[in-house]
Amino acid sequence: MLIDSHSHVNFNAFKDDADEVIRRSLSNEVWQINVGSQYETSKRAVELAEKYSEGVYAAIGLHPIHVNTGFKTKADNEESGTAIEDFDIDKYRQLALSSKKVVAIGETGLDYYYKPKTRGRLEQFKTKQRGVFEKQMALAEELGLPIIFHCRFAHPDMINVLNYKLQATNYKLNGVVHCFTGTKEEAEDYLKMGLYLGINGIIFKLDLNEVIKDTPLEKMLIETDCPYLVPPMARAERNEPLFVKYVAERIAEIKKTSFQEVVEATTRNARELFKIG
Image (cartoon, rainbow, N blue to C red; front, side, top):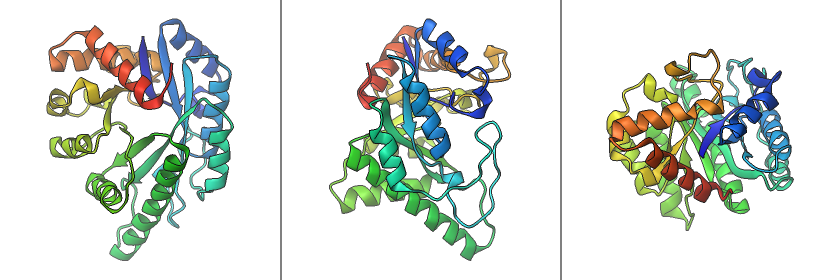
């Protein structure tokens, strides 16, 4: 069995065939955690999870690109069509408590891909993202849930935020850095904090071989981030949980180990982190 630790079958890209995709996944012994990016998609993730007795779970959170920082951002019609949102911690808390299938808070974090160009506006942008990020970390701590971290073009700031949190409080950091794209040194920083690294189809686009070689299987999760990042060997226009097997195969090649060993380790890791199955 494989576990796709980060999928988005809750997105608009699957609005016409979500259940078909999920059934295809489950029939091939691939479990999934559908991850929210806003309240709308978080709620949809919970609704999907509740339809299945096992194998389908949910994470709820506000993605940093959707945080209302006061600056324009682009809506993604593959996702929900909604661009920005104010974070309402009470709504997310209630949603988390509404279902035992909610296994994590996220995805949340920092994303500097779309950012203002002037220094003053940039600092305001970063401050607002960080504020919402820290509120979601607090919610995860309150609920005893792990965090699915999103980080794009912001690893130094993310590492600083997490180190400050660890040094200033008795905070117990627990979670995964999803779709890791940082350097070998940044990977080491996250691993020292006790975090897992999430590996997906980005490895077919970026050279992350050294990171994968140096990351113990015991600290690695596999994911698709579907509908994005389709592995080329899938020969499909849209990614789906079933294709997580191609990520596992590539990791096995890079680490010179067996596909089965990668599957067993990453499945065990996901079960332990998210307390599933």
